[in-house]
Image (cartoon, rainbow over all chains, first blue to last red; front, side, top):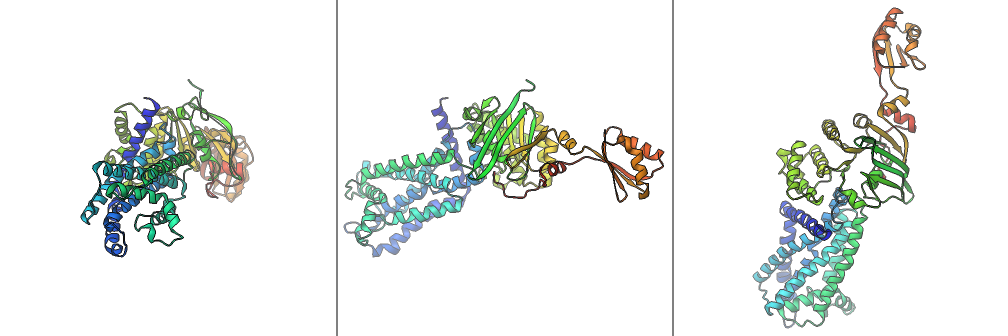
Length: 257
Length: 320
């Protein structure tokens, strides 16, 4: 086999490992499913009445935003998993094997992609139950779904880097929530940017997360896209390129424990 | 080929900031031997293993393992070594079988071989009954056995065992020693690090004693003990006033100065063989009554204390 073929087979072996873990740790499964459902219900029924979204039902405004947010955090398992692997010496074992030098990371991020598909289905199911409907042609909707997965994949690499950099799984957790969580809120995901204080609006408008949400919303329910689709794709690819490079570099220099 | 070197390291240096972990270490191990790296926590044992297993790049020095240059061809080397570390590096959320199968695939064993080898090793390590249980339900000893099995998946000619029994209860330790002994009888070269003197004594053919990043002594366990004064004869007298007479009677058996403390005479032996019978005959002829008579071997603890001026017990956090 060539080294590329080995790289692919190593990636699949390790992706399988990550996926097997999910049904065996039911608390993780709850994080994947119950938490996003709670979010949808809270926003639709608790905050929804207070948030005005001219020209669009709040549920149609919200679902694309909340789906993009859940895709962003789908890779969180990668940060926790890598951090634990590092602590338990598994990364040392992998690094001493004649396997591809990036397979631990490509395997993890691929597994995240698979769980993101599951999460996407669950979120859409809940969305439909509370009244969300697609309002665009099939090609656009499919492009929107693909974009969601691309965004999720990009952030998996951010989390891979966090997992390899943080000193413990707890630190990885804190790091992710301190920096990424506010980023997803100061955006067009949950409320229109125009409703924010004027000093905050430029921050929200220039937040890549806003472009991603606007793009998915445009593809799902036909709101004006502007440049958001291109920008969302470019941001996702850029984030993937930068953080994949950083994460692989960290992996190669990882010192166990 | 006999006498061929499986591990050959020279001048290895590594520092972390201001902390010198390795201060120019030379190590050699012939093919098929068990080389023990003995030293307290923080002595540099783990750093040496990490360099020889390609996990860490040294600041200076060269190393060849299994005939492959560690620094120039790390990926080629990785196919020829097995590593079992200080922590059982196995996935808690996989079964024992799944763990070994995964490692076999990552070693790129040929088709079907990872599963076959996994079953074989589980049987060998007495884990067949637990093969399909998740590792998180395993005991500490079972995890270490699985970890050791994982290091053997590709039948590597050189094996690195970094403190394989640290943290195990005495019974599991003894069981793991048996396992390691069987394993080395299969012909693999083993580099074993340990802070347990009895472990090195029992398992290693040669021992390098490491302290503060340097090799401070090297030899067979026997040689190291001989350096420490060799074996001693201890005679407990029925009547302590007979001490001088006993010492005189045994003079021709001793290699040095005898001592008398309370009613016990201690003297270094020239030759262990036949010493006890000869001592009994001489004491009898001299009319000295002995309550007890025993040959005492120096422990590696004695060796360590003499070499370093401090004991071998852990005295600091592991900085390696």
